[in-house]
Length: 269
Image 1: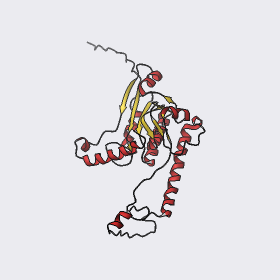
Image 2: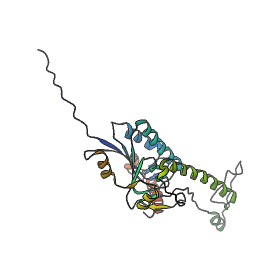
Image 3: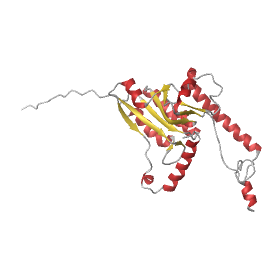
């Protein structure tokens, strides 16, 4: 008796978009809310290559951080976008400032809420000068180096104008790299405005006028309008480290949270 073979036609799959959440401070190392290429690399690869997404959406909420990590993440996104021929749409929530905006430039189109904070295209270094505190308390600072610049910018010694000049030179180079990234990605969309690259930041509606972003819009309605009401969303986001989830790295998480809050506070949020 011959077997009975029944063919069941494949049902058409509903279109889906990979949604990659980029939230937190951009910094190397491990942390509850740190964004870096080592942590995000596998997620970005999966977002582009797992299944057949219609597009990749970036949900961005970051006050910035490391210029190097910002560049690495953005470059990985663009490399995969070029390889897979997938459009990349960016959606800013509270803030995409400094390195956070660098991440946003990896998108082909950027959408914001009217109240989002966008911009801060500049470079900042901050610290404290504690040499007077040591002097008042009779504490002598002893530093031994090989190389005259090895102890530059030591917070326990008086500020040296030559060290400051060197630091500003490095900052200027990084700033120019940032500007080049923005101009390369935004091109003729940018308004001719002298304030664009001064480190100033703006709310979403003004960012639209300046050409830093493409329009006002939120993730779900924009993607449904673009890919149909039946479009589905496949979410990707970095998980907290296992030890952190069990409360065994509370001190590290607390310090990271304090750093993150300080960065967000710069933008009034």
